[in-house]
Length: 438
Image (cartoon, rainbow, N blue to C red; front, side):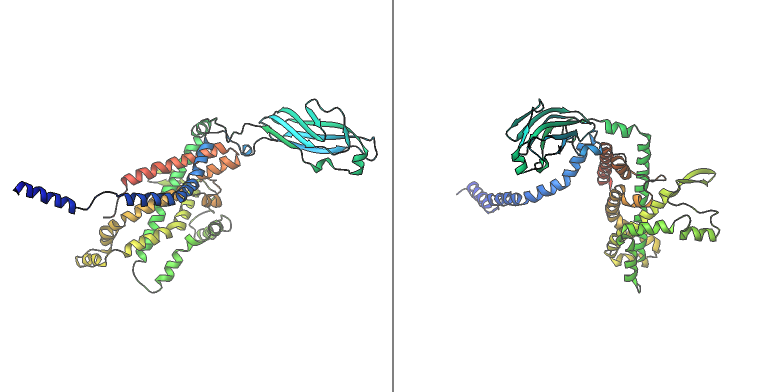
């Protein structure tokens, strides 16, 4: 055997000994089985998440009012007029018909009903036919706000006296066709034109960003300070941690009411303390005053009182969440690094700046992303504190006011789409440029 044959034989043996790479037939079958078993759960979650989002986008392109949620229908009220006490008495079966909508028309309206036996019906309306005791009417189109009365004259017979039946015993069945604005395929950009052409929208957007950025930053700074404070062991640290969690775990209605009472301009505790110490000349309406002039370095600016107070509430209420995550990350940092830095003569501030903070960048980034999204979508805090008045109206409050106060669901949905777009852009940029732990 030549050296070449020997080398080829060794290569064949090496190939035979090399395990196969890639996904084998059995793994493919297992993968398909796993996907098949998980697909129902995945579809359910997808529908729960995407269903409301798709519906919101759908409504934002339609001029939907609150009244459009109930489509136009034909309604009938039936009654028997006259005395049916003896054979030959004349009575009238009357149907009071109307369109439930004052704007939308109902076409191809039909009425079907079972008449009481023993009433001899005279000549019916030209739109109706009677077969035995069955009444069928083709009433045509009912315009918006349409009302009319359909009357059938009848004569009482002995069969009716033997078995008197109230005409209301059988409900009339009405049918018809209507153009439901929620389900048709007519779309418009009027909602977006209306909100973007409004100067108020840009003011609300600016207030939303101001409220979100400073509220998020305040919560992170307070959480960082609290975590640094409780990172060292001392007697009663567990109790202090529990107290720090109170703003976050307490019901929002309770803490909001407490802040409103404490900051009340007439009977609030804070105003009383400031007045008695001479810090202010008159009471401050923290939640009702839009702004006050403030001189700074020779410049006079309008300081937003109500908005700043709401931001302070936001930072106070939600700093415990940041505090918990930051403290957990701090306690995972090796103590040897601090001991080495202390031996080298580093001050506590230098230890924090060069050791703690670089290790906390990742968790601070994640917390900033989450708090930004949650704060930008926050509605209940502002609504309970100010109702959106005094310069605190954010986009989420605007969604509520457009949809329910003004009854313009389409405009409210359009504002909600803008909220989604802003958060999507922010999240995309954040993931692209966010820093990581060192």
